[in-house]
Figure 1: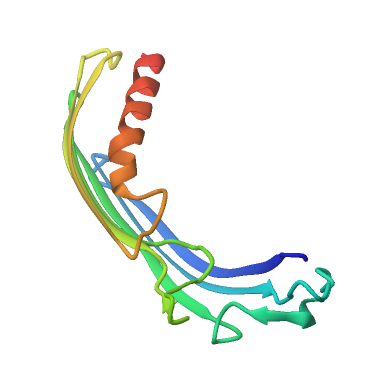
Figure 2 (figure 1 turned 180 degrees about the vertical axis):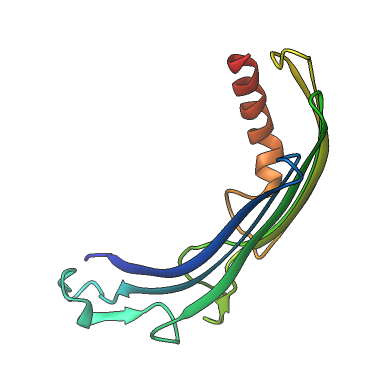
Length: 173
């Protein structure tokens, strides 16, 4: 008895980014957009106790999806601005939305689950000493995700990731 599976993931994408400086470089603005199309195929070996199926021959396998060539398209965009009114003060704002590139997932009914996506906003202020050797950054952010499953969710980041980032920050200082 053999139990094998096979999968293939193809991603095609294109994007555009822009960065500009205004008012004697006191204002820096950024904008970017990217669109990705994800195609994925998967199959599971069909066999029983009385037959051996060659794992190198996908022709003998059953499809994992009702649609033989599932495809999803998503867009990621980012917008941001930084304003430096004084050498010791900077104000910033960013918005982004994203589409996670990954294999197609399905419900028990074999209908596709849309790839995960999210939205984020952050704004803040940076204060620095006259010699720029020390900075204090105050930041407020909001993030949300949808169509997320398993690892990599905001909940798991809140439980495990924050401590990791905090340790990295202290090790860097």
